[in-house]
Amino acid sequence: MEQLTATADTSALMARIGALIDSGRPAAARPLLAAVRRRSAPSASLAELGARLAMHEGRIDLALQEMDEAVARDPHDAGLRKRRADVRIRMGDRDGAVADAAEAVVLDRRDPAAKALLGALMFELGRPADAVACLNEAVSDNPTNPGYREGLAAAQEANGDADAALATLNQGIAATPGWVQLRNAAILLSVRRRDFSGAYQLAEAARAAGVADACSFGLMGHALSSLGRHADATDAYAEALKLGPNDPYVRHLVAASGNLPSATRAPVEYLRAVFDGYADRFELHLISLGYRIPGLIRAAVMQHPDIVAGKQLGSMLDLGCGTGMAAVVLYDLLSGPLVGVDVSAQMLANAATKQLYGELHETDLMQLLAEDARQWQLIIAADVLVYFGALPAVLAAVHARLEPDGWFIFSVEELLPDHDGTVHGNGDWALERMGRYAHSMPYVANAIRGSGFKVRTLERQTVRHEADAPVAGIFAVLERPQHGC
Image 1 (cartoon, rainbow, N blue to C red):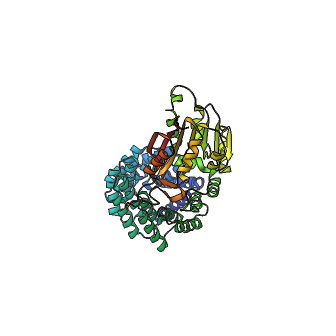
Image 2 (cartoon, rainbow, N blue to C red; image 1 turned 90 degrees about the vertical axis):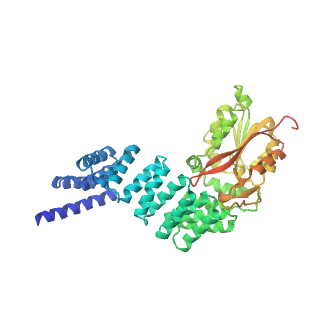
């Protein structure tokens, strides 16, 4: 009877220790763990508890020591292998984690968690085919686990089979209809495939089932805007804002939905409102998306004949300069004045802190090009013409402000067909999600020719990544020729 009571007390203490760890109170858990160890023999449960506590304390080496000793005592315990794999992941030892996860699978072929862990590690190591094999088994063993389904779908997509990935997610939705993450993953996958009709249908089904969060409605807005249904997109973004009022990404989507699809450019008031509220996190957000345009601009300028000859360029006008990201990568190549223009006072305030511009003007770029009679050797527009649908007017205005042999470098997003082959807008340009315009390559080429420029570079480039997918863009380096100037 005394032994039974001691066992019950030990179990209760261990449960209490686990609760303290989970509630973020490791300092209170440590003396209790020491007390239990004084009265109990070493066990797998105690070792796992000790490792959990050590990881919460940030003592990863101690956690590994706990697990090494436990595995040495009981090398055939699959649970210990999984726990040590978790510790090794925290330490950055992916190879060691894979070895432990694989051993856990060998020790217990009926354990779907071990297979899912091994599959996740294979995925992280860039081995999607192996990840699919492991995660397929995990899903077969436990078809109602939504996490396994989501992991399998990600591996299938990475392995080049997006159809199988969508089927996996849809099967998971049918099995666990209340799991919003699976629904959002399916919507997001459809957006990446440019199947905007499918994305909308999935989002609408989530809404009708009462299983939709701010992300669901935000993605619905993406899909509707991409389908040209801008009024409906505005409603979806408004619902997203209700559910996620403090989410900055959702707030940005809602602000963007105020644009008008029939306009040939974004209203200045809209741009000012969006970017004044976006300025303080603008650079970090773009960097997190793998934004490539400043680097591409510098690489292009490095090919300028003056730079190749060891000289610096003279004056530069930065249209839509924002926080000055382009100035940072070009400043050492310039000898003349660097002038920036933007409609957002807050973006300009951030640009001013870099102390790179000789002048900063808060005005619409078209107004400055019309009123400032100066000419520049270099004009850039990094992701600025995405707020113009029709391009001839802005191209002509830039042409007039370039010196003979001056260069104009800009980027836009490319207008691509949807999953079903539909091309939105007028075929030349279309207002897409988040209030930006996309342009077809033939249209851009024709607009350039009609504006009198000589093309030095006109190529497709990835601008950045959104929703884990590359954003297709067009990158142009143009020259104003000597004749006709």
